[in-house]
Amino acid sequence: MTEPATTRNVDAGEVAKFEAMAAEWWDPNGKFRPLHEMNPCRLDYLCAQIAAEFGRDLSRSRSFEGLRLLDIGCGGGLLAEPFARLGAEVTGIDAAGGNIPVAEAHAAAQGLRIDYRHTSAEALVENNEIFDAVIAFEVIEHVADPAGFVATAAKLARPGGLVMMSTLNRTTKAFGAAIIGAEWVMRWLPRGTHDWARFVTPEELERMMTGAGLDVVDRKGMVFDPIRWSWSLSPTDLAVNYAMTALVPERR
Image (tube, rainbow, N blue to C red; front, side):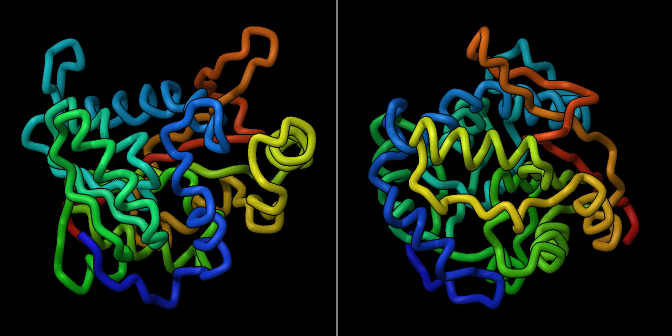
């Protein structure tokens, strides 16, 4: 589904970067290789948080049936597809219109029904749409107004629902890993994909979430081990990649 994605919080320059790479979303050795390798770790975190909040048993098939999930900045559907397989009703939105046909075609080939839209989170708020869980992974560092983005995401989650975000910490270690390592040395991503000044510290993200009326309930680092070439979750190491979960109070 395609509709205009004009909004004050869409940074045209950032959107253009991902438009240029849209065709490569499902190539595990292409420009999105880091996300493919990180995806199991991202899913472990998200599934654990959702299952704990909504009392779901992950050992059962279609354990998220009955839940409505929103994936903001869905890209090619790397997160949306696994949630659809778990039985959730998934809506994936992206400001980069070129991502949507790629995501739709891949989902169709897998026999999955996902509501993909070229639109913005603000547009969903205007349409009074509400979700059980709102996911925005690796998005906030690319928007024009991070605090405004968090506030918008909070409006899309129902009372008792979840808002889950991940980003890169603004540390020297993150600069080395995400920019020098991934862009300059390994050349997994085009130079300029990330801007270190846009990275968000955990303290900043928590303040944004609290300011949006959310209660932060969890935060964990996603840590890459170059020896084992694998990702894992850490309760203490948030120096590079990290994720944060917040609960929408029953009364706001």
